[in-house]
Amino acid sequence: MKDDCIFCKIATGKIPSATVYEDSHFRVILDINPATKGHCLIIPKEHFDNIYDLDGETAGKLFSLATCIARAMRDALGCDGMNIVQNNGEIAGQTVLHFHLHLIPRYEGDGVQLTWKPNESNEEELEEIRKAIRKEI
Ligand code: AMP
Ligand code: ZN
Image 1 (cartoon, rainbow, N blue to C red):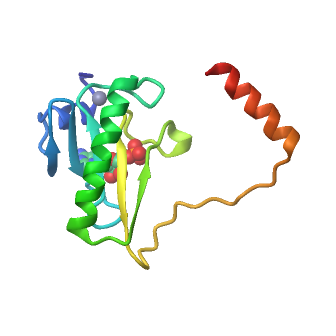
Image 2: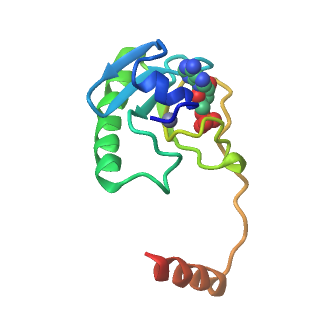
Image 3: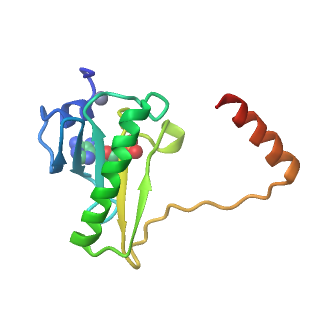
């Protein structure tokens, strides 16, 4: 628990939230400023700044929970699709520095934009990057 962290307070129930699910590890809430109707956040009760800090066991439990929540949202909301988004670092759009997973229901014509412009690459560059990442795993 980090004293100055709003999601620590929400996850542990010190600040009320629109909770759709809770267990000993996670709280799932409705985003207060939803991208679309039913936008949910899965928040671990333990504080992790971002994905780099998250341990494998928690990550496994979290994604397993995400499959269950996603199906419940699809059935409850009748959405046409869903984006799973997780931001790390300011440049990537992270505004709350406590790891959380966004589940964003998508509806025809909702106007949400989560796209990017595909860039050109080449075999040599891909091979160099592939090797660099592989070496660190
Ligand atoms: P991110 O930009 O990935 O860090 O996402 C933070 C999300 O938390 C945003 O979508 C906010 O709307 C949401 N948020 C911030 N404060 C609250 C709160 N008190 N209750 C519910 N959602 C919140
Ligand atoms: Zn926290």
